[in-house]
Amino acid sequence: MKLAIGCDEAAYALKVEIMKHLDEIGVEYKDFGADKGEIVLYPDVAKTVAEAVAAGEFERGILVCGTGIGMAITANKVPGIRAAVCHDPFSTERSRKSNDAQIMCMGERVIGVELAKYLVDIWLKCDFAGGGSAPKVERIMEVERSYH
Image 1 (tube, rainbow, N blue to C red):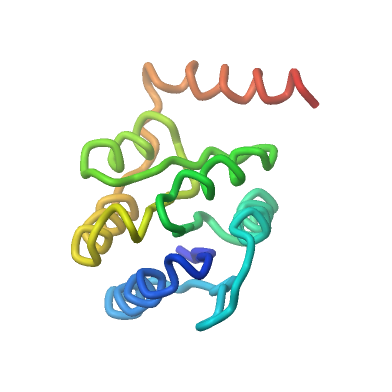
Image 2 (image 1 turned 45 degrees about the horizontal axis):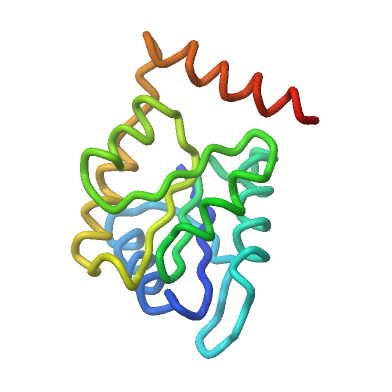
């Protein structure tokens, strides 16, 4: 699996820790910034990562900012993307199994490094379960298509 990862300046430290963790567990990724000390608008990073995932360049993405909320809102504006804020194990698992989310979003100001790494592990191991969730995800995509 190859991931796209990005952050704003509020979450640079967490992004670095997540990248170290991905290196340790052997997951390939591309860093879309921000770089140390760089001030960016998180919507710009979220858009770039979400477009790369939507285009099939990456299977999934991880976005981090102060809360994860702004990244998720922005990423979800990109057609075909389902991004979820993941701050606890159950929601993280369900974002994949029930909602087939391709992008997880976290907030450095909300969770600690060890929890973030644990959530990344959960998220990477989970696949879309289909079943009763499949028609719901299809309906999400139908709603999206109705606006384009």
